[in-house]
Image 1 (cartoon, rainbow, N blue to C red):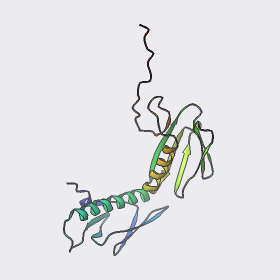
Image 2: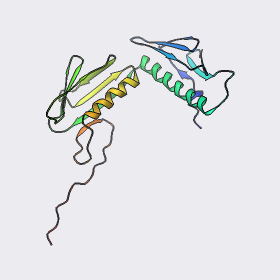
Image 3: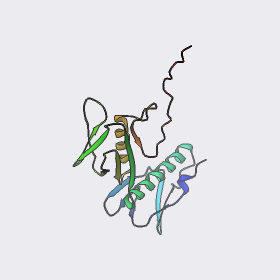
Length: 184
């Protein structure tokens, strides 16, 4: 059984205000508001945020799942406010690249057309000089993951040549191609 919900969330520079079931998490550059369900209660103890079940709630499976879920969501929001999140994507392929113009990314991925992507608010991207290494940064882990998944879906990595858009730490299992038949 997972005990994620029981762990306190440590924080240093974030400012957290608890009012009923609403938590306001404020940092240097961003602010999040998180609503807890009625079955959970959040309390502050020094530099720890503790999420627990309400006094009148029993330990049902659904309550345990909500407890762990909301504790993880709060931990991600606190980490995003304090440090932020970063994901590195790699484009592999001859002539495959990305270009940045303001808040718009333009991908050249071997199709007959270029693919444009408008970056959502709160997401920034840095490109290397070849245009094949993209570093996405955001304070919101959920939005960052959605953007990276969308970019990967433009040209998913294929197993024969290993070309496409992938995360930097992703391992592509390569398949053997056709072999020439021996003359008998």
